[in-house]
Image: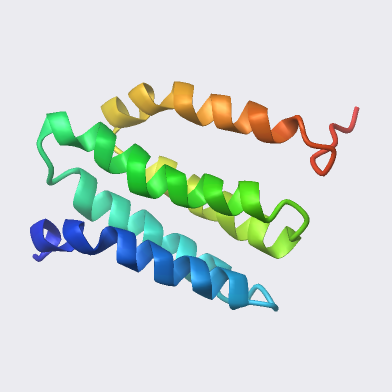
Length: 122
């Protein structure tokens, strides 16, 4: 209903949600926040022009998730919340936007796996 006007408030909404994730010591809000972000992606990206979709997905949404992962490597609660948010974003993103964003996503994940905090178990 208000998707067009919602797009201008996405950065402020994501900032408030990141504060909630950082203050969530018991991981009670992880699922609710990730569902909210998934619905934001679903309701805002699809209503934009094709030329704006990729930028609207990568700039606020992916930066949000990877900023949480990158800045809080040792906090498992924040990491789990960021991964849940990233999953919901990818599930609700239009396919053509996701295909274009896969290179960015994979590069960031490979970058994060280089840290000792994410050891590979064989």
